[in-house]
Amino acid sequence: MSGNTLELRTALYSFVQLQDYLWTKKKVEHDIELEDALVDQEIVDVRANVAEIELDHLRAKLEERDMELDILASILRLLFQLPLDYSSSYRSTVLPQIALLSFHFSTILPAIILLFFQSSFRRPLLSSPPQELEEQDMGFDILNSEV
Image 1 (spheres, helix red, strand yellow):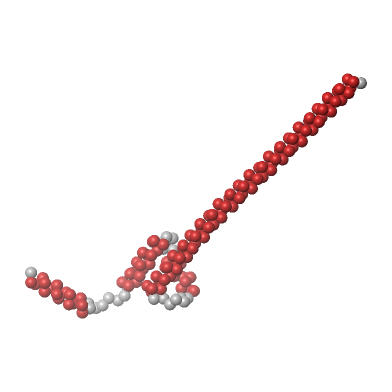
Image 2 (cartoon, rainbow, N blue to C red; image 1 turned 120 degrees about the horizontal axis):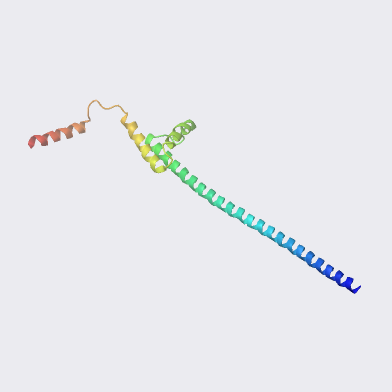
C-alpha cells in the first residue's frame, strides 16, 4: 500500500501543481486582457483629446472667420452706405457672392476694394472737366509757353 500511497501523493501533487498552473495561467491571461482594455481605453482617451483639440482649433478658426465677416460687413456698409439693418435677402445673396471670391480674408478685402472702384468707374462721365482741372490745364499751358 505504501507504493499506492506514494503514487497517490505524487498524482495529487501533480494535480495540485497542474491546477495551480492553470489558475495562474488564467489569471495572467485575465490580467493581460485587462491591461489591453486599459491600453485601448487610453488610446480612446488620447483620440478624444486630439479630437477636442481639433474642435477647439476649428472653433477658433470659425471665430476668426466671423470677425473677418463682421469687418467685411462694416467695410461694405461704409463703401456702399448700407443701413445697419440690411435685409436678409441682401445677406443671403450679395454677401455669399463676395465670400465666394476667396476663402482667405487677405484676398477678399482687395476684391471688395476692386469691386468698389469698378462700380465707381461705371458712373457717367462728366461732359466737361471740372473748373479746377481747366485752371490747372491753363496753368500748365502757361508754363509751356514761357519755356
